[in-house]
Length: 238
Image (cartoon, rainbow, N blue to C red; front, top):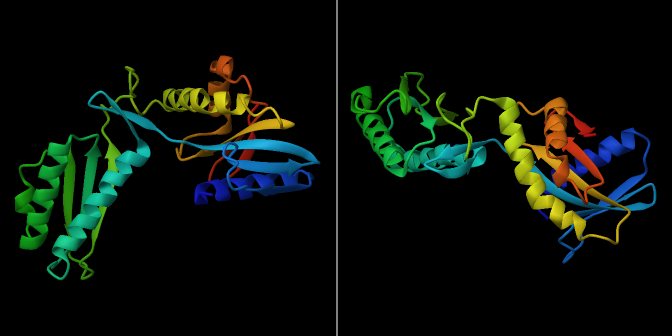
């Protein structure tokens, strides 16, 4: 059982209970698939959990939003370790991706030199289209590394910019359905086969996810119900 599965299952349980359905669920050892088994109104649901991420083309390869942010997290950890006890200022490093491994290495090296020498000058050769480093004199001597996508970045195998919200969701939903619907199709000993989508994309809403599901309705065979979990709500996608 993954924490993300448990979190989404608890949210769905509360939603169903608020709509006056008696509900319980369990994670059975060795029963994957499905990820979760729900009992709702004395009917047995097979529930497959997945997450909706934004995606970006990275040198011809698919990179998820999680991958983009993990780059920033890893750089932050290394910079903290290499400069611990040697920082005289606080620093904020903004990375504008996607970047090649060489570009990331040059950015990290320039940031490390700047931090250790307490001077922004060592970052002068880094393009502002790739990264920005700011020095803060607040006495905390901390490091923050944040990430963002370039305005020119595109979705994988597409001419759509990553800023196109509906295109982002269409890409993610098509990917999810191609992965999960065949799994649910095989689960024949259940009353309902359910796809539980937990959004990791801040702009995903019920209406645009529903539009994507309609666009790829030919891929929903074997899926009886679809629920969307966002940080603010749980809803059924029609």
